[in-house]
Image (tube, rainbow, N blue to C red):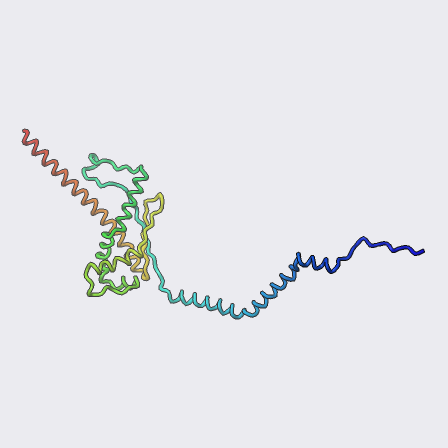
Length: 234
């Protein structure tokens, strides 16, 4: 008596099942392998071109650095104190308060405006005779002013590079001001930086002197009128 063979519990996937699987789950490994192969082929094909581009960029950077005019920056510092000038003496002058930080900051900003002012810049030009200094214009990278220019035009021509290359830095919570000037000549940079500080100090002293002179003149006039009224009353 023949008995039927037992059936296997494992069923093999049919061709239809494989097509269904491939339609929803693409062969990712083959795809990645193909992409990597394309990248390797492109890298081998353009390897020489890439090296040439990198070498050209390095050469261009070296040439630009070599032919670029070097710049030199000279810096100097000055301390700014908000102390008022004594006009009538310590006994009669009102004390200047330095405890208010807002007033102190406002005073320092005012002094920086003075340092950047046209008056100080013109004092620098005249003290160094920059209008007739070819070294200054060469350091600024510009031609000297033409002879047909008027005096005012020559001054304006020299003022522009002064303001462009001047830098003033005021750190927060500090009374020390840093002044810097940049040019292609280290001697010119140092000379102009020092001149700005010197003329700023001279301008500050001149303003205090003028203020004191005006106050003394005013007080003298008041005393004269008081003396005249006193003599008339006597």
